[in-house]
Each structure stands twice: as C-alpha cells, then as structure tokens.
Picture 1 (cartoon, rainbow, N blue to C red):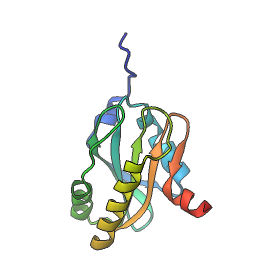
Picture 2: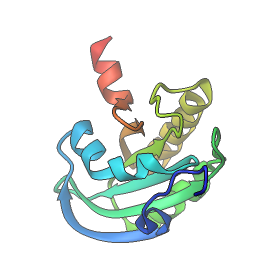
Picture 3: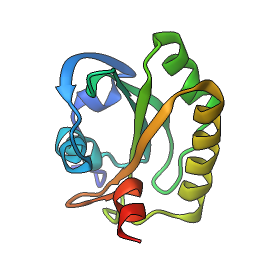
Amino acid sequence: MSKYRKYPLEILKVSESIHGIPMSSPEKVYEYMKTEALADREIFWVLHINNKNKIVKKEMTAMGTVNSCAVVPGIVLRSVVANGVPCIVTVHNHPSGDPAPSQEDRNLWRSLSEGCKLLGITLVDNIIIGTSSYYSETESRERR
C-alpha cells in the first residue's frame, strides 16, 4: 500500500461544468469541496459564480506539491474572463489538514483581488480547506 493518501479521480478534472449549485456560505462551499481536501498535494480551484449566486463551473488552475502551489493570477483569471462570469470563489487545500493561511496565501489573495478589481470581477471569498475544517477570508475579515 502506498504511503500517499488516495483521492477520487474527480479531483484531477481540470474543469467541470456544473448546473447551478447554490453558493450561500463558505460552509456550503466547504461541504461541496471537502473531498478535494483529501489530496496529497496542494490544488488550487476557482469556482465560477453566476448572477444568481450559483456555481456554474469548477476549474482546477494549479497543482503543486505537499506544501506549495505556484498559482499565476493571470492564468486564474483568463478562464473567468472568457466565461464572462461576474464572481469567483477561490479554494485550495492544505494537505497538512490545517486550513490556517500562510503569508504566501495572503499575498496571492491580494494579487488576485487587485486583478479582479481591474477586470470588474467580484472576488467573493478565498477559502482554504483542511481535512476537517476550513478557513474563509471573508468570515475572518467579518470577525475583526
């Protein structure tokens, strides 16, 4: 048996069209994405959100190693612009299971936020999923 965790093949789908899964809270996003928390490496996803606040596409934009993932904001936003969606939620896992954000996470979120503002896209939230919990940048900001 391999020492690496096994995870569902669906995690490897680069892009998946979805028909209107409601995105009403970070907890709902976590419930929808918690299978991806089982991956043995960091994976970065973008959820495309329509005007009715429903997820219409789940797209994997980067896959890294056990403790890092090189995410390029231009690549993340290219597909969002092409699909013409007004909002996104970013989601990535921490294979350690601890969803606490690193300084690199915060720097990436800042870059993505600036890019979204320039393009007129609303960045609804940045979520990190762990094996049994999640971190939501929006919830954290609201608590302060």
